[in-house]
Length: 277
Image 1 (cartoon, rainbow, N blue to C red):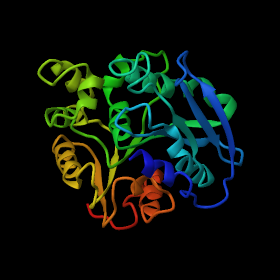
Image 2 (image 1 turned 90 degrees about the horizontal axis):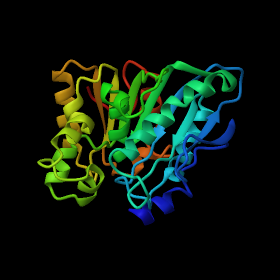
Image 3 (image 1 turned 30 degrees about the horizontal axis):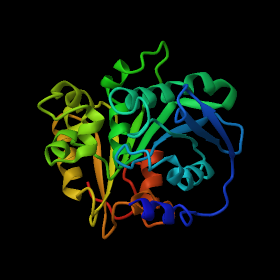
């Protein structure tokens, strides 16, 4: 996966980038930073919080989301591409990784006036493990990790091939999930309950889940199960299958996913592309 990500970051471009880019620290750790991209024009601009994947491991970083950040900013969205502590860094895992994501999001409240950001329209967009972070960020559970006098509200979530069942993956002996959570589901049941999207529904915000039907890492069926559970709990959630697409390409703005992804971020009633309800 590392080689695939490294190769893709060199080609995931839709065209010229139009906007400004600023790297901003939100905490003391080396990975406590995010890149703010703001479109040309007077604003205020709707915001997309970008949360990369990589199964919470330090070898995967926010750099592979740069093409997507640039594409969304060129399309008129301010983007906040968040880096966070991952396994292999001091303080990573529970609770540090989740504290980072919550803290980084709430920093937007301080930045909004001078950067002309519209915080009434914040979308959390995550890929793979970042999809878990994006869904969790929209939940009430998030408030316990970085209490703030002005928490930034997530208005919608776009989850790309997301991790939605932390307990199920950990029970399938995926060691990185157990390391992030500090133990097995039996040992840390409370932690899995407060972080696994399947346990957190209803989130109470609109969600679009985009998933390739040929995903080699996270099966499409996992998103089908999540969407069914979220709907049963009362959430407004849509599943967008991209026929023949694998795990990485759903985060590639130069791939066939782009019309569906952009429509989902815009909040269109029905995302474009190869989709079904």
